[in-house]
Image (cartoon, one colour):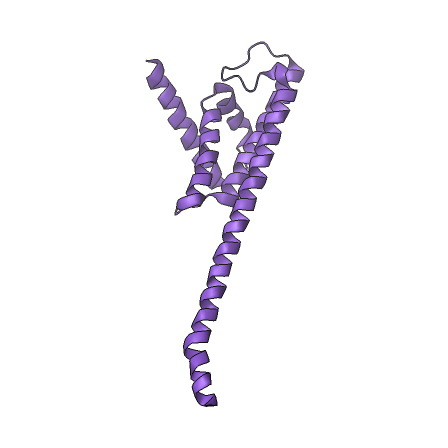
Length: 158
């Protein structure tokens, strides 16, 4: 009888335990990815608050802001550096070539935000100053987005 019970545990119990463990790990990983996304999104909202606090820089206006004085240009450059750093962190922590499902949907929201900023001439100019020394894969990715958005704008205005 004990021998039969040990076979049952080995044949049924062990595979079930492995399956439950694997499912628990998948659930835990999904929760960690969601927490990372939420944390990064909160940081982006904080950046938008900074942009509102510095309304004189008109960072939320898609057109470049002419006539800034030296102090305003420095603040704007610093804020663009913060934004580029946030985009890099999001890229490093969440981007993968083989994303699917919710992971891909979360990434697409970041890509949309990056594209929105890449449409701006002043952001593309800030990239030249803030991207050297950053993660090479991120730099290539953001530069490709900027080129696409610049090309799309050129075609749209023609």
